[in-house]
Image 1 (cartoon, helix red, strand yellow):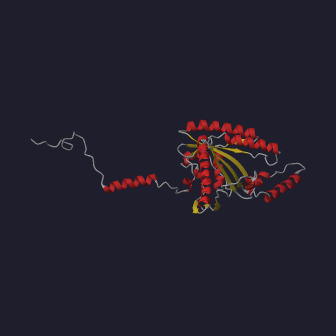
Image 2: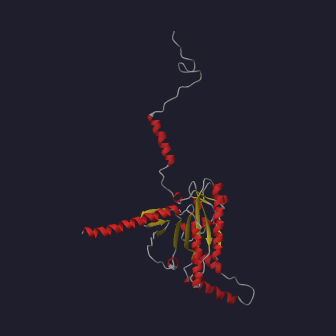
Image 3: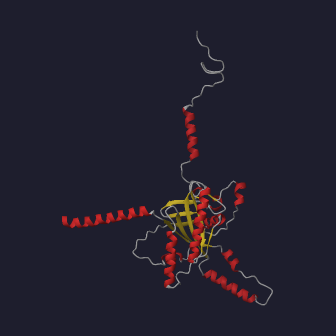
Length: 324
């Protein structure tokens, strides 16, 4: 006796069960193409995508990658060149202690930025308004002198110094607590050096990056409350019109052309004015020093490898004349 197909389904299937439809080859290709388009090719295609961070928060914490976070501190200059020899030695020793504070898990970047300012804003800052007294002529003369010095001085350059430190953490909460501890220790170390320092807020960090990406001195307009209604990100408010790379060490940023140089200084002795001489250039320049501590065990292994290489070179140099 033959079995009849079950009503509403295939033979031997329970009622209501539908047979699975196999995808055709063209449908599989369409799905694979949609997945590739969603993932992208991993390359930056806009100016916003070129800026390498994920998000920046109002408290100044920047999420660089999925597990890397950073904060930044702005600090003032220290009167080192005019100090006495003993004072210079003390400052140098304190600076060494400051750098030795960071372990291998903390990446540090020292940034020295010379930026141009808008002439109108600078003149507004030194403008002395007239008052109802007999000293307006003096105010006018003094204001003219300041404007003359502004035109003949450092071409309206403003010099800033920053230290940015980054760590890796599993989540925002863990990163926030550790960054706060490191920030407190850095501020205390700057206090020992006699340097005025303060942490940057999210707005100030964005303003700094906007100044780097817009060297013409365009004004910066932004508020974190604008992000949700507009659907934009912080990168949309700081990005230049375009980036263009691939011309050797030269690049284009909007209408500006810049150049990047990497300096590897191998010398038995360095003058303590080498950085000051770079920053004394009367032009817009950015100098970044990247500092990363090496684990003590790894450092010892590196030194031992170098000693072994030197011994090998010494033996080869002794054997070569003997063979000749």
